[in-house]
Length: 117
Image (cartoon, helix red, strand yellow):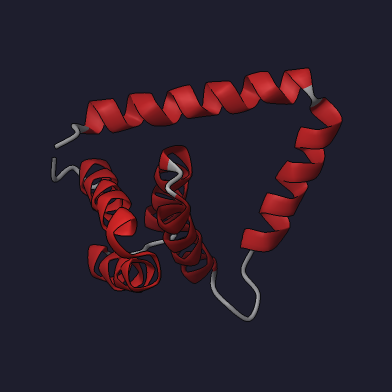
């Protein structure tokens, strides 16, 4: 199981890579960040639900950094472990075996960030 420190370091490293890319391709990354902010802001759906959907998609796509990013955001918006588990069940339904592996990573990240690791 990953420790809180490891998950925190992984998130920091991901943010550093994102920053490096932003310096290398500033116009693209400004536009992308704007898209991210617009897509995840509260509207008819709360931000927490949008982040949980993003986790499910990240699990289905097998994107480890995306999982960490969106799990942290979902937790920051007040998502519970139980809500995450329900969303992961849908991702597993749609993605089968590979999604179970990445869903386990999402739970591991959530637990580490919640101090349960």
